[in-house]
Image (cartoon, rainbow, N blue to C red):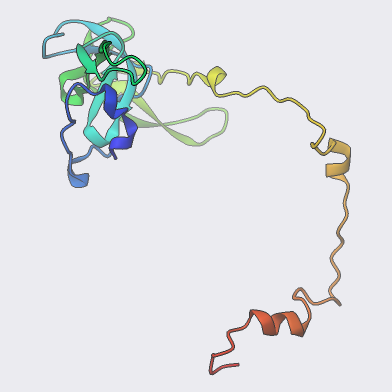
Length: 190
């Protein structure tokens, strides 16, 4: 599961986390504001850039920066480059921030019935209070593609036109000669 990270930009090889040790129920998602509780960035806050579920780690924007030395470009071998990148932070070293008090808090999930739909939803709450920590909205703008009609597109009116009507007198399979071609010639049930 290392394909989640660009291996050329890793500060060092990520530690392997056995599938049995991976976190099943994540309380932190991309876009959450978190507080770093330990490490060289202790006491700072940041926004989760990426959740690395296979490593039980997070990438926090502009936090835990390391220098990665990159190989020289084949066109100009004299020029080696360095890049400042975010290194993963283990999920145990961060905690969510309470939206009201702006302090790091522990959270738990509760089922809440939606008043409009009547369905139960799982929501995050601060432990011991009724303060909900809403999940950040997904940035759908970068995933939306501009639709451009081309000459090969079927017009909507033609796509809606009904061209097939079912008839019970016609069998759903093709003629027996085609079925013979599809059957296994070496089968004892032939």
